[in-house]
Figure 1 (cartoon, helix red, strand yellow):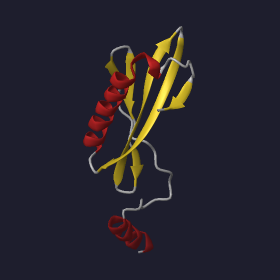
Figure 2 (cartoon, rainbow, N blue to C red):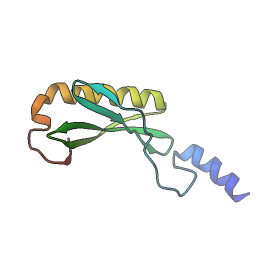
Figure 3 (cartoon, rainbow, N blue to C red):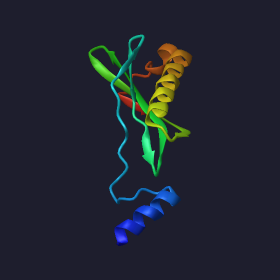
Figure 4 (tube, one colour):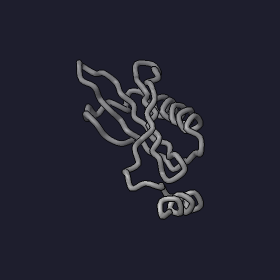
Length: 108
């Protein structure tokens, strides 16, 4: 009975019904130029926050740039589509400077 009431409460409050940590929703990589885009929206209650990573191989080493934005979605497909578009915009706006510092991993 308590779990039933907990599920009802979580449906109205937007909080997750379980105590498990929120895992990102992963997708297959999308190629954009010489970069790989991984859409990894993060579940926050009943919504998904726009988040992902951009990878590029430089001199035999994989460099990673992660990003999280304020946008939230109710649909997994919408979250993935917008994450890929945002990553493409980050790549296009920053150009070669996105990976120019040589850092193995950092946030953008």
